[in-house]
Image 1 (cartoon, helix red, strand yellow):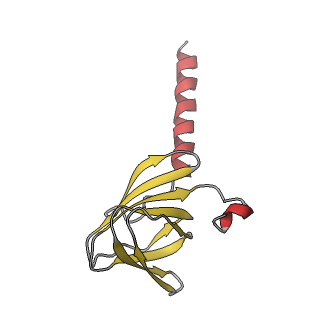
Image 2 (cartoon, rainbow, N blue to C red):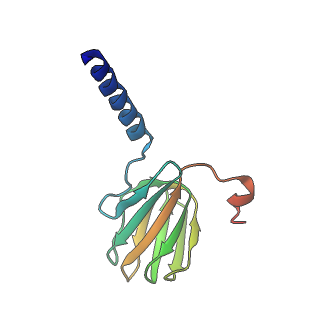
Image 3 (cartoon, rainbow, N blue to C red):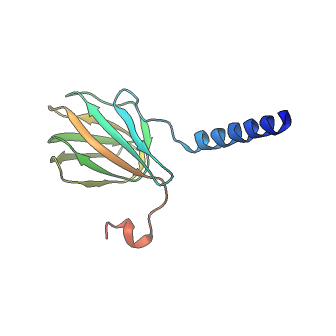
Length: 127
């Protein structure tokens, strides 16, 4: 009986270790909070003060849904810079990359839904 309990505990520990290994670290924990996660998506609540910026972090392909109007500048690891004005409630596609995000003159608040699996070719272009 004790052997069965021991084996069950080992199996549970291995399963928990495997699940933890699949989870990517939270990008810039000061600014991102995981609010939901399963095998297909990770949903993050993002908040940044005006003129704030994140640590360099890696994000998967995602859809961002701004909760407020704000401006943001994304600086990719290769030096490419993209700026954008976000409108509350208007979703936008955000390709995965390593980047730093810089807030403009207003605070940033958004929900970001990261995809864990590669999108199908017909969906990759937003179709």
